[in-house]
Amino acid sequence: MTNHPIILFDGICNLCNGSVQYVIRHDPAALFRFASLQSESGRQLLKNLGLPQNNFNSFVLIQNGRAFTQSTAALNVAKQLKGFSKLIYGFIIVPPFIRNRVYKIIAKNRYKWFGERDHCMIPTPELKSRFLNQHSCHLKKH
Image 1 (cartoon, rainbow, N blue to C red):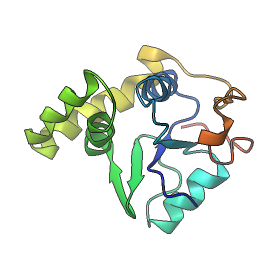
Image 2: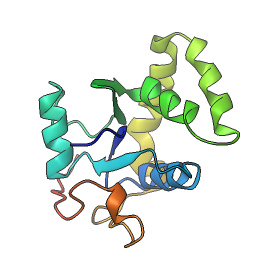
Image 3: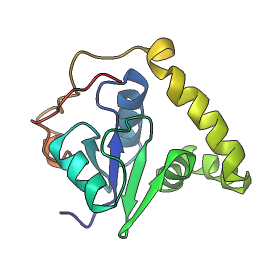
């Protein structure tokens, strides 16, 4: 589909959408591509990687044919961004069971703490080329 790293995110989560906007702002080389977990593209990528297609609680990074999830995905994205964000990658030394425990608490409460949208994010015309199959987002309540 693309040689670029792909970020799969919960398309109706305000925190997730804010994170995507942050990545876009700190990725001047336009390295990353995006798809919501609810989209046809997102679900197909998950299926191809043998990952559950109905678990919207994980942030997924697909890079070099590998899938990274939860905190490992987020830290690997941070490492590739410009600016201060690179420093966050230092948390990779924390054992995954600890990092992912924190990640899961945030993921479980993200709608309560940050809210949710009625529909998936629709990219601006300038950003459309960075989103895979942006028109078909199938919302399923969690």
